[in-house]
Image 1 (cartoon, rainbow, N blue to C red):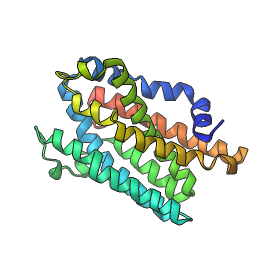
Image 2: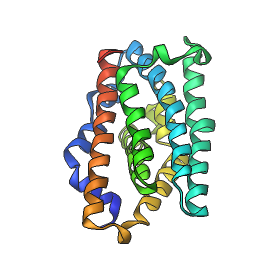
Image 3: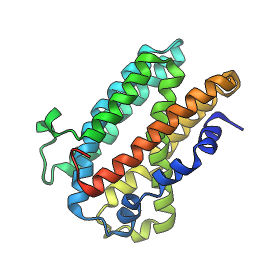
Length: 222
């Protein structure tokens, strides 16, 4: 079994809680309140700023030109792709350029700082796995929603742009490239190293669940 599949197998319960959280279900069935979605988008925009910085940390941890290119490519994809989606939607009611550290929730702080600490105290693969929960998980969520709703049902969906972004062929391809890159380390991971990676993956996925949860509660200090 490949490395990423093993990580999911070892952490199936929390992974399922992440992919099938009530926030995701409500977003899909249109019952998610707009204020919850805007709270989430605002926090996710701030998160993506830090998430992009995590790829700079990944680049610093790189040992080969291939690893460096990977880190730089995905950092650029986040800045030029995902963040622009958020800016477009936030422009309906929030000036993204005015967001600052005082707007950042405690869950947001915990998640981004955890990932940075993984990179500072670990190696390239540690950081790669920490980033994978978000990079691959969102693609899984987007694909599942698209498959259930089908494009013809999205015309009047209030969260159409979000669904089309994360369910898009482009995003799916990026996530597949990410997963393949993680899997390229499968044969080099010892049992001891896998346990460390599994713990990192579990914590990152727990924080993804917490991110959904605090978006439903709209709690900055949760």
